[in-house]
Length: 114
Image (cartoon, rainbow, N blue to C red; front, side):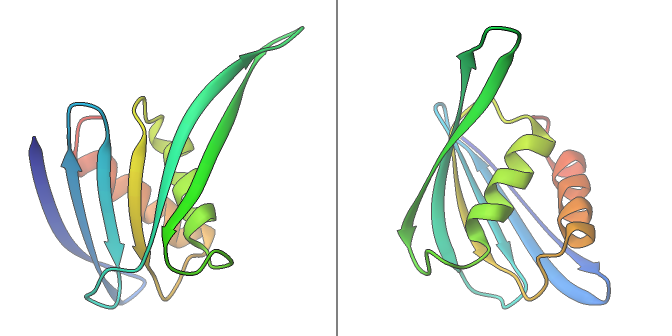
């Protein structure tokens, strides 16, 4: 198991990021409130199509708001980082705009070798 953390300012907002890699999955914490947020799991599969393979995502809320941005954040980052293992995300963000998520994706790329 590996564990890495970093604190960065994204558009002037302190953002804490932690990544734990396990043998079979990742645990990724994203917070701008210094606490855990909604916890979701995501798994990426591919379906053999007629013309091309398509990615299918299974996202489940473990704890927290099912209507919040955690599903969108988890899917966006899973695609951006091309995660090959299932992941558990804890998401507590003030700003979940595309620009913020792109900045978080870059920090995650720099923090961990996916």
